[in-house]
Length: 566
Ligand code: HEM
Image (tube, rainbow, N blue to C red; front, side):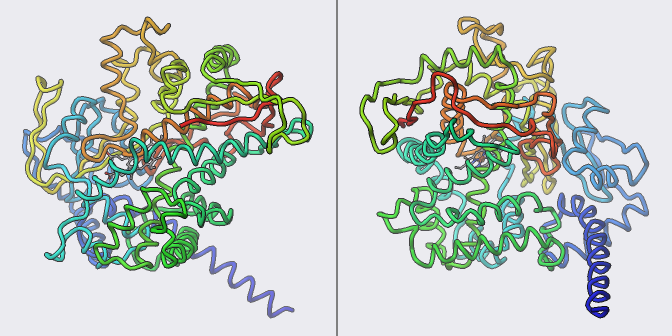
């Protein structure tokens, strides 16, 4: 007994020490993460030595006067290192608040990076042909999702035999996330959502939701994964959905090292291994290419392309661990903020309900169907999901303003050749971006620029994207300016290809929830947005997701069967 107690104490102390070691190491990573194109070992050893030596000696890289202005750190030599060390992507916001520069150079030791805050300059950078996302992004994806370096090299064309996969992959995005393929995805996802909505039973007390954000995470993962993976959907086992969010909560730049992830990033590593194992079974059984199994064109075409590069089932599974996460993480956060902002404002909710009532088609059912068996007289409410925006312009505007505020994405590019970008839509000052430097483009400052969004830029305004003819107060010129400064989906060649699907799915979900349901107990005072460190759409501060709520059918809408047409 005593022995087992002391063994437990030993492991508990060891675990605490390990946690501290990991915390210290994690704090170092953002710097290393922002730099380098070396192997993980060179990355760790070389990067740390160079960083420490250059920090100690205060060596800065040479600065051409044509480059963006240099921001000097508050604490000489180590200031930026410390800022990034503590704040990660949020440090870019601190630098902007201090300097208000449209674009800046930041040096960390002997390395430099550029941060672009101005909307027009961001657009110029995103359009420039020698700005590359893949070198930074694909290396990161490989290490974070555990794909082998040889696979990445093959996909990127570094083996000198295969061309890069990026051009055909862009084609796959266009083919599978637009038009009829996008509608098919939305049809399946919204069909699964309808099952949940139709299961709400007021007589049984509705659905108790302790945490609205977590509830939406699970719901959207269920509906979207079904649409993506078809009838053999590995995520229909709820524990895989939990593993996905466990991964998301715990993934950290420490994984970029690729060294001992099972020790240095234990929770995230464990979760990704479980997901990859389930996906490997799916791919080994060839469910992705079985046309009857209902796998989406997105999954089918991606795996067909990846296999054509010689990628085996295990590697395919590790690579595709990213898919469901990419298709749900930002979409869940935007849905949460839109829902919370609208339901927290009774006047706005009333107006949203009025337009939703005009958009949704209600038909008397009159007879018992499979869903209504034994429950008497029911109505059928059909949400016309595709083209819905024209029918619910206020809700669409509210949705955009919720994303505007929540988006804290930081797109990243690497400059391949010296490039000059022009501000002011082509007529402003020019800046030289030097080859080999990484460029970061935070959406937050563009989305809160008072010159574009007005004096209430920091606040939610559901009518901000409405024209005067639609009941908004912005002129057509202002709306054009706002459209150009709305960048939650990045831009250029890598503009998010899933944005149409996210819009259709979220707008239809919001329409049905607003019209037919109540979120009893939603507490507007307990809503607070966290600052994103990784550069994604903001989540709520833990414990500040509006408090516990109960989802109930709205009075007058108790006997409705919901469906979506796409
Ligand atoms: C409201 C929801 C969403 C937001 C805010 C969002 C945001 C973004 C952002 C900021 C990027 C990086 C763009 C850049 O680097 O310029 C991106 C890329 C991407 N997104 Fe989304 N996204 C959303 C939903 C989705 C969905 C539903 C899917 C898939 C069904 C998806 C698939 C992708 C893919 C595949 C990329 C990589 C594109 C490339 O590298 O060419 N996204 N997204």
